[in-house]
Image 1 (cartoon, rainbow, N blue to C red):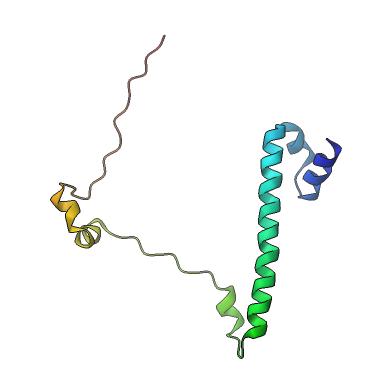
Image 2 (cartoon, one colour):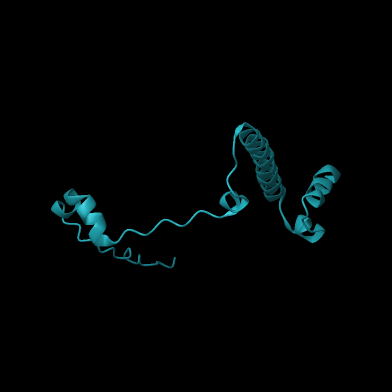
Length: 105
């Protein structure tokens, strides 16, 4: 218990959060953070080697800029891309699922 608590605090989590969480939740959160940290270390090493092998680096902003979000596909464009959907009767509209009746026992 003390080891888990120490690890939890080492991740920057609050002590109150530890005591409010179940052992399962603590284990999942600790494992997820450790996995993320491990990937960050691996990526740092990979990029370090990648940059070392480059003859000429691009500007720093090229590497720091976030990728642009993909543009959304409109219904008409999707139907043009997949004409067989129209043949099956799909007109591009999506209706919400019907509400199920709730029975009280």
